[in-house]
Length: 295
Image (tube, rainbow, N blue to C red; front, side):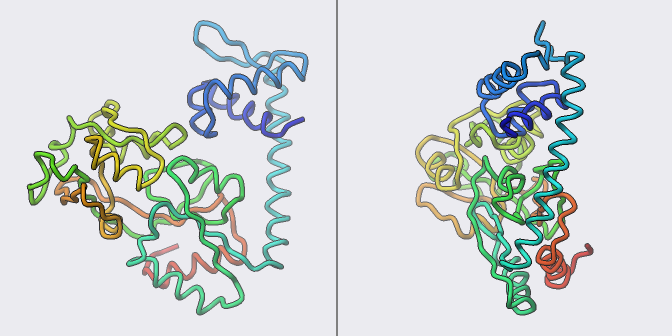
């Protein structure tokens, strides 16, 4: 039996909501529904009742989900133990990052790590807006530099540093000549919104929907920073960036303007919950020393 279907069923059993489950597992809602139907067909019984826009577990489904959860937990524990053994031989630490590593802050961290751990190779992987969490869950990377708020109970976060935010505005917009802006200046603007699969809290934070208390107007759907910049330059989109990102991502059609009252942004060192492999412990220790944080 396909373990992916088991995982989707367990997650749906926890949320009892197709939309939330699809977002968590980075899958289209129609694809999720199809996978659950295939699983139920393979099993020969219904796991879920779907009626009046509500999802509930059948009696058989409740028992099945409990057993499936234990199977997946045992498998995850086994995989973690095997990865620890493999890593001890490979001595590779895979680091994921999105758009930038905020090198003004992190260069000292990684330099110290290489100095103290010359036998461990650091391998960096650039991520997109839609796959940061899934890259950790799947084991494609060991550690991710993730900007909060992007929370998931399966992950563990160590706050590294905070940054202020800037407004990202079209060069020819009415705001482009301002020396500074406030959040209210952007609330009625259309935003470059991350594509389906990106965490909802990430979307709300960067597009100011958390302040507006309603979804932002959409000028474009994006997955990468270059897509954001072109959307701002040519599609009339707006966005907010951390200050460090605005220093390294330049575009002639875009202006960055300080936001005087936007909440600061936190960069975190993120791992699977409970990951204490030697390489991860070494990186966390270097973070404490290089950045002066408590871990």
